[in-house]
Amino acid sequence: MNSSIPSRILVRGVNWLGDAVMTTPALQRLRERFPQAHITLLTHEKLAGLWLHHPSLDRVLTLAGGEKPWTVARRLRAESFDLALVLPNSPRSALETWLASVPRRLGLARPWRNWLLTQPVPPRSGHLEMHKRSDSEIQHAIRKNPEALGGTQHASLHVSRFTFQAPSLAHHIHSYLHLTAALGAKSEPLPPLLSITPDELKATASKYGLSAQSDPAAPIFALNPGAEYGPAKRWPIDRFIEAALQIQKQTYCTWLILGGSSDIPLATQIHSALQSEHSSLFTLHSSLLLAGRTSLRELMALLKLSRVLVTNDTGPMHVAAALGTPVVVPFGSTSPELTAPGLPGDPRLHILTASAPCSPCFRRSCPIDFRCMTSIPVSSVIDAVLQSVQP
Image (cartoon, rainbow, N blue to C red; front, side, top):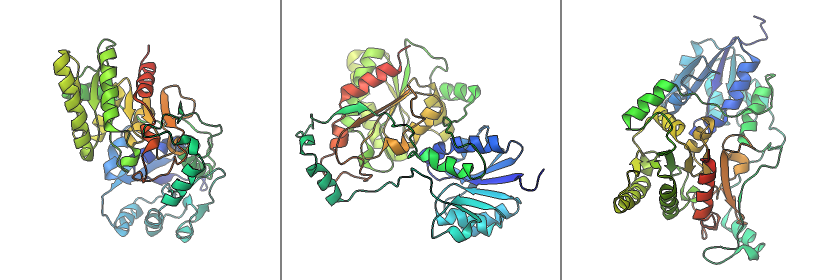
């Protein structure tokens, strides 16, 4: 092989689930650019399952929480990589590859780590930072739009399905494609891609008493009410409950209530409300409380088995879209222009936003009245779900 063409590529992966899914178009372009190379992904052990059977990778290495950079580097040095593609923007991720003596190290240019890279790549055109608004900035935005006050229910705010203004170069997918383009890969985006096998679908369905075959008379829907970042990203729980109940009455679905261990209180509250209604209606369809119970691969299988996912802006939102499952997402404090799932124009993506003048603020908790989320009514979510599951 030509010495200028890398034969052993290390990709230092990102550490968060949603961000990891958004790197998959870049990994696909990297494989397309270097079809004969051996590509290894270094990822946090909590995300290892995400990459099983991924067609862009030959191998996955993991790092443990708390593992020191020089320990990681010692393992990497033994692999004799000739190129490291550093996807995170952190100094540590670049330091690991520098300590590992990888001869060519490419990543986004940042003043505090450029000396660790042999090829620091300048930020792309169209790049936007996620600026967290201060209290004064939020108040100023509201004062400029007094017509959007609207009282406690903010009825005057306009709720719409978000659509991208093409080309959507602000989206994080383009950040990662920008890096692979510096290696000669195509920069055009591809849909995020994850893989799950039929055997995994059957095993997961069997474990949780579900059918691996789609049944229009008894569909499986998924609901993910949490958001690790903070309460500002969470549509109110009473609205999740109301929407789930109304949808269940119309579709006879079984709800899979998903989430991590920190989401168990929220998920339990929703499950209890659905179970109570289930008893009063004497129906065969209700919900399964699965928050905190599934592995990452099982979560992927359950999302693939579901006809639709109703969720906040979370990692599972990105996973579902990458597996081809329709999603319905109320967006409030964050920006779909930056982190919406999938690709623009996909009809399976229902992203609901309100015209709150202070949104997106990127705050963990709302310093005022949470109008960006409370302005998205239950009816909008119900309509989006019913539209997404139509034959």
